[in-house]
Image (cartoon, rainbow, N blue to C red; front, side, top):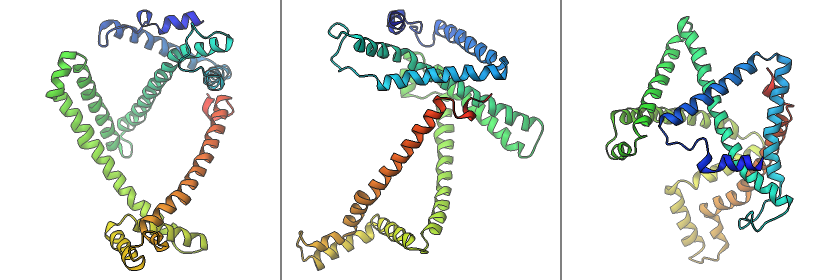
Amino acid sequence: MMNLLAQATAPERNIWNATPGTSEIWIKMALLLVVGLAFMIGLVFVPTRGRRPIVMTFTFLAGLFYMAQLVWPQLPQAATRENTQGPVAQVSFWFQDATAVVGPIANILTAFILGLGIYSLLTIHGKRFARLQKDWQFSLLLLVSLFVMLFFGYWDWIQGLNPENAAKLAETPSFAGRAKDLLFEGMLQVMDAAMFSLIAFFIFSAAYRAFRIRSVESTILLGTAFIMMLSLMGALVVPWNNFIQESLAKGDSNAWVNFLRLTDISAWLSDNIQTPAIRAVNFGVGIGALAMGLRIWLSLERGGVSA
C-alpha cells in the first residue's frame, strides 16, 4: 500500500502528469468521468436496502481516515524516512503519502455535487418553463443567465490556457474576458450589494424590536448597543473625548475620568464582554458541529444517507 501511494504521488509517474489543455489530459478526464458516472448510475439501480449499507461503508471509511490522521502522533518537520524508524513513524509517513492521494478526492466529489446542483436547477426550472407554470419568466431568466455565464466563462478560460495568449490577455482583455467581467463584476456583484443593502433595513427593524426596553436584560442590551454605535461616530467621539480630557481630567492622563471616553468604554466592552461571549458561542457551535459530524460519520443522521 505504501509503495502504491508513493507511486501515485511521484510526479514522473502520476497519471495526471500532463500539460493542461492537451488532448491527453482531456481524454483522462473523460474516462474518469465516465467511470464515476457509471458508478453513480449503478448505485441508483441498487435496491434501497442494499444502497444504504454501501453509502454507510464509504462514509465511515472516509471519516475514519481523517479521524485516524488527526489523533495519530505527528512527526517533527525535520523527520525523514532515513533518520526516523519505528512503526509509529512509518504509519505517520503513510498518512502523509495518503493525504496527497485522498485529499483531491474531496475536490472531485465537490465537482460531482456541483454538477448535481446544476442538474437539479435545469430539471426544476426547465420543467417550470416548459409547462409555463407560475413565474416561468423567472425560471427562463435563470436558465439564460446560467448558460450565458458558463459560455463566456469557459471561453475566457480556454483562451488563457495558451501561455503566450495569457500574457497578451493580461494586458488587453479579450471580448470574452470583458463580457465575463461585465456579467460578474458589473451585474452579479452589484445585485449582491443591492440585496445586502435591503437586508440591512430588515436587520435594523429586527434590532428595533429586540432592543425595546421591556426588562433589565433588554435595557442592558440597548445601552451597550447604543454606546457601541456612538463610539463609531467620529463627530461625537472627538468632542466627547476632548471634553473628558480637557475639562474633567484637566490634562492628567492618569485621572480615572479618562475611562469615560467613548473609545475606552467601547474597547472595554469589546474586550471584556463581547469577546468572551463570542468565544462561548463559538465553543457551543464547535460542540454542536462535533456532534453533527459524529452523527454523519456513524450514519446516525438518517437524512444524510437515506435512499
